[in-house]
Amino acid sequence: MSGFSRRALIATSILISVMRGKCANARSKSLPFRSDTKILVAYFTRSGNTQVIAGTLHRNVGGEIFEIRPARPYPEDYEQTVAQAKQERDRGYEPPLAATVPDFDIYDTVFLGFPIWGETAPPVIRSFLHAHDWKGKILRPFITHGGYGVGNSPSVLVSHAVGATIEAPFVMEADPERRTLNEVRGWLNEIRHG
Image (cartoon, rainbow, N blue to C red; front, side, top):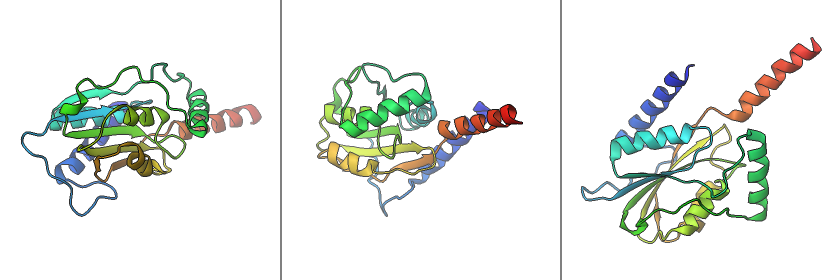
C-alpha cells in the first residue's frame, strides 16, 4: 500500500471515529465539546503515524497543535531507539523536553497522541505529563501501537495527569517498524542461505 493510501486510510478511520464520538474501549458517554472549548492537540511521533492522526484531529477540531520532542532527539536507528527507550523505562528516567506548551493553562481539552513503546507510553510522554498542570482539563488520548495494544499506558496517564478527566483513548494499530525489520531480515536470510 502506498504512503498516500495508508495515510488516507488512517485519516478516514480517525474521522469516522471522531465524528461518531466512538473509540476503542470507549466509555458509554464522552464529555461533549462546548462551543467555547480551547483545544490543544499535542503529540509525540517516531515513524509519522501519530503525526498523521494529530494533523487530522487539528484540521477537524481546530485549536493549537504542539509536537512533543525530547531535548536530545532519539536516535534515527529504530533498534537504537528501542534500546534507549527500554533503558529509560527500566530506570524510570523522564528525559528533558525541548519545550513545554506556552500558556498551557488556557486549554480546556487536550488531545494527546503517542505510540506505545515497550508496552507503555514513551518516557518523553511521562516528561510531558509531569511538566504541565492537568487539574480541570479533559484529556483525550490517541494511541498507536504495532500490534501489542496499549499496555499500561492508561495507568501512566492516570498517575501522571493528576486532576485531569481522562476520556477513553482512540487506539489504532499502525505500521510497525519491528515487523518490517523482521520481514526484511527473513528475506535476507533466505538470500544468504539459499
